[in-house]
Image (cartoon, rainbow, N blue to C red; front, side, top):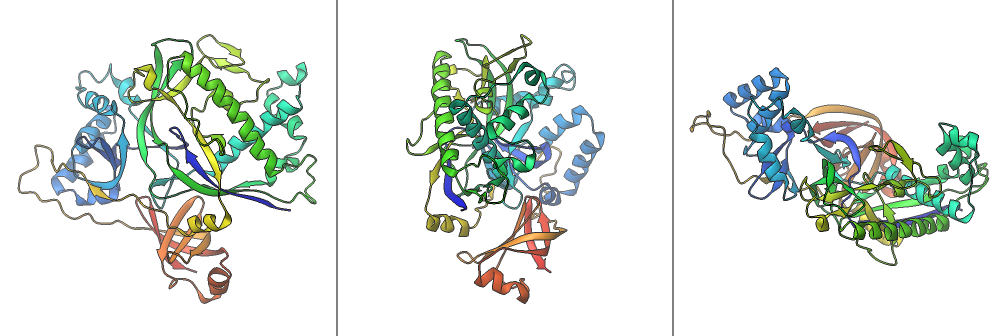
Length: 467
């Protein structure tokens, strides 16, 4: 019998789930007065520029050298723009101004610093410019926890030959889950949806700093990342398919998945809080004692993504492997990581079970797009004549064909949604839906597959035709 777990995931500490993208210099301006990043559509922005500014931007882009990156930052500084807003940590503005103050003469020795000034984006919905939690990330977290639970309840050992194998970790999972071939893996019957945002999700650009676990004021490397902030909510489902006829030797039940997360991440919180305390850092917020703890995203800690009793964590500076990490990456308001007491861990969240009726309410809610607001400054570079006026942005729409999009209908908000290869497009009303799809989509309230024509405006997609 299929088991379904409807739940909310609540973020407890900053979470960053990598998507391989950064905020490009031509996609944002910094609102220094409000300490926010304003993320805009480059097509619309460029279309709104006066001719003299367009020509200047074109000249910078054609150079294509490291100095041109710095010139782009300077070009966009204080430009008026509309877009979604991301909060900035307190140390970012000083860092930003320092980068902008680099002169052409200083550039060569500061090139490394300029290269590091990149803001990694967290995973986001293409059609709505808002973060979400990929099901693959949530499933990976649950799998790690369940493997640790099975290792705790029935310890598995690898012989020396297996330990020397480059696929030792795969062999360990094979034994713990009792399978040889991929089609026998019991986790293939565990289905985890993408977790969608509830309302507007607060984001913040912060620093990740590498901090020693032993008491020390010393911090090492840093990274700049966009994170989902505590208090943010996401809805989704976790299900376990019926194992009859699956060939699974040791099935997984929902009860075991929940127990694994409670046991493993509960003990990880206790361990990490002790290490944080010893290092003089802030402890992790324990959250709701009735909720199920979870660890997601980058910098979750080496111990939280490995199996206890089989850890082999490389210590880069010493070029050795240990069963524990000697440093951890922590969230900081500045790149120095000072003071230590303000540093907090990454990746903590919790799952809260909700009834199916409440889940349906969230499912029928539209994805909330961040409000578009204008920066307070309207200053152009000094060489622009005072008489130049900024024209209204022109939307540049790019057509795309999605051959096998999945269509769903939300009667509560009269919205049709199409999903294709991780991208999402929407339209209000039923007018575009062919008659042949009406019964299944509107009466039976089931998803259907169809060819869809969409228009992309920046990272947003709108449905314009359905075939």
